[in-house]
Each structure stands twice: as C-alpha cells, then as structure tokens.
Image (cartoon, rainbow, N blue to C red; front, side):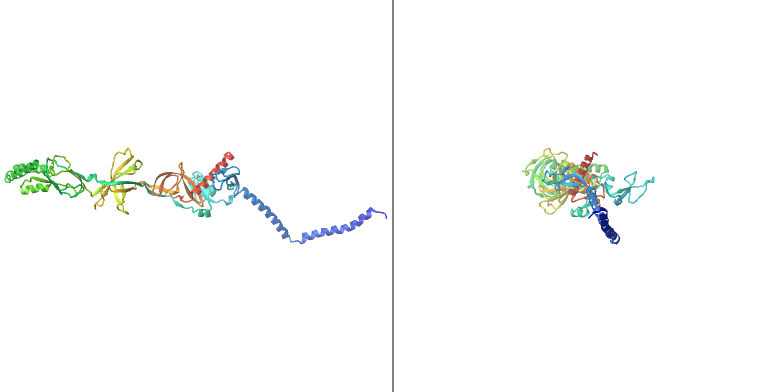
Length: 490
C-alpha cells in the first residue's frame, strides 16, 4: 500500500474540524446563557477581598501606626527604641502605638472659630472680624495646640467612668490658716491688786489669814494703829468745829474755814481711807484708835505677808496680793512662722480636758515683744471670761486659731494637687474626655483647700480622683513626642 501524505491530512482534517466547531459553540453557549450576576458577584468578591487587604494595610499604617518605641505595661516611664525586657520587672516590652498622621478632613469636628488677628477672641459660629477676614476654624484635635496648652490626654467616656474620674469646679473662697497650740491658765495681770499702806503704823488685828481665800470689794483685811492717822483725824474734827463758828460770818471767812475741812478730808482719802469711814468719823465726832484697811477689789488672796498681826509696817510694804477671777489669762506659745497670723483681739477656740465636749471662746489681749532664745517661740496671752468661777489658774488647755489667710482666693482641694517637690500640678478637665496636666503656683493652705496664685482660672474643673493615672499617661505621651522629635531632628 502506497502511503499518501495528502490523503492522510485530508482524513484527519475531516475529523478535527467538527470537533473545533463544537468547542467554539460550547464557549458561545457559556457566554450567552450563564447568569451575568454570578460573574458580577465573583468580581465583587474579588474586589472586596482586595479592598479588605488594603484596609488592613491602611489600619496598620494609619490609626494604629507604630511609633517605633517600646514600653513596659507595668512601668510606663520605661521607654526603649528596640524590643527587649523591662529593667525593673523583666517583662517583655510592648510596642507603643500612636495616632494616625492621616485623617479625613471631612470627618474632623470643628470646636470653635478663632479671630485670625487676636487669638483670644473666639466665636461658636463662622464669623468675620472688623477687616472682613474670616475666622479660622479650630478643630477638636487642634484645640489644645491652638490654645497654647500642654500635653493632653483623651480617654474614652467608658474608661473615664471605670476609672472613677471625678472633677469639681474651681471656686473663690475665704481661706483660713489653722494654728493649733497648747497653754495654761494664769491670773489676769490687769486684774491683780496689791494692798499697801501709805503711812507707817502697827497692825493690831488681821481678818484674812489664808492664801487662796476669797474676798469681796470693801471687806476688811486688817486693823492698823497709826499716830499719823490719829493726828489727821483730829485735824478734820477741829476743822469741822472751827468752820461751824463761821456760819453767820462773812462769805470769805466761811470759805476759808471750809477749805481747812476739805484739806483734812483730802489727806485722809489720799491715804486710801474709805469714804464710809470718813463719813462715820464726821458723824460721831469720835477719833478711832485703829482704822480698818479694806480690799480694793474682789478676788482671791494670792499672796499674804506672814506674821502680819503685831507687825510694824512702813509705807509701800506689800501686805496682800488679790487677783480678780472674773477673767483669766491663757498663756500659749506660738512659733516664728505663725506670728504673722496672730494679732491683738484675734479670736481663739479653747478646749479643756476638765470639760470634755465643750469649747470656749477667747481673745488675744497681749503679745510679748521678744522670742524665747531656747524654744524660738513667742508667748501670747488670751483673755478667757470666767463669770461663774469654773476656771482655775494652772488648768491646761488646747487652743486653736483660725485666722483668714486669704480672702476671695481661687482655691482647689488639696488632694487635687500632685506634688513632686519641684513643681505642683493639677489635672484640668477640658470636657469630652480630654484632660490636661497643668503646673500651678500655690499660696496659702487650710481647711482642706489650697490657694492657686497662677495656673488656673475660676470656673475651670480640676480632677480630684485618678489624677495620678492621667498625669502618668500625659508624661508618657510627652516623653514619646520628645523622642520622636529628637529622632526626626526637630
């Protein structure tokens, strides 16, 4: 059999050509009769898958962009530029994520509008200044920088509630400065008297013999015999008798006679003879061999000269010391840094262990002029009324002064202040979950409040709880910002 190539090709072609046409028809059938929605769904699924991957990539490079720093979850102040362990607790460091640098301008919230020429002038709505320039919008994420504030912390409201963050408004109030000290009661030096004689004589009888014995004004203390007194009594009686002879005489003569009577009376009064004794001498006309010396005030006998009866006395000798107990002095000591708050007539609250649950009011009557060189304290005398005589000298007392240190001062609670020794910080609640640690200058402190001289204004709110956590977070953010700026060469 002779092999013919052309005949073989013709036979193969006759078989392959129908097969090719059948394949083309099948493809045409698929194109014309399969649901186009299924192809669209597949394309949509593919696009969605590609978009999901894109969003994941954007999320890592956007809202969850890494800062390139690692920190310890237990010790946030530990920062490192590469992974490792915490030098304190040996825990693995975690990477710190920061806010995204790219954000959609359409989603930014406008907080207020600011005057382009005067940043202090703001408006809640769009406005124009006097020159027709539009106010500049200030967004929420730019408010802190626009207002010149420091590092702020933004916390989710749910986290704020879980942290039990509490804040109160800054108020003006009178701030008192409490001074607490101790003292003891002593006799009122303004109500102490000394009984003396202004003439010489001899004491013949004593009526008050004991120290601490109470006496009343006008009560006889002792009887004294004095030749000078007897002579003056005789002169008074003689002058009265002589004046009686000039009752019908000329006016000048009667006046000279009465002048002698007045002179004798005055001499007796100068010697502290009671007016009642002088009147009795004139009525009876009898010279008293002894005269009674009476107490010039009521009180207690603090001191008595021993052996008075029969003693010869001279002018100026102290026979008795009498103290009036209607009021007492409380002697207290205060330190040098407290003297500026105490003045005469300053009120004080006094408490005695002898009267539990009771307090008494007193007033500063005297401040000694010099400090004690040993104790570096100054003695202050407080007057304590004692109308019922319930207080006695020597009683121990606790004294509290509450002078007003500052009037109408801007104050915050003392627990709201974070004190580091070098600076004082309060956490200001800016609202909407934003907080700002702000350094302040403090003044006087008392009653659980402290005066703020500079740093905050009336009406702002300060955090009184969980402020340590907020301040730590702000310090961490500030440290991260500084390290990033340093790395960038800013």
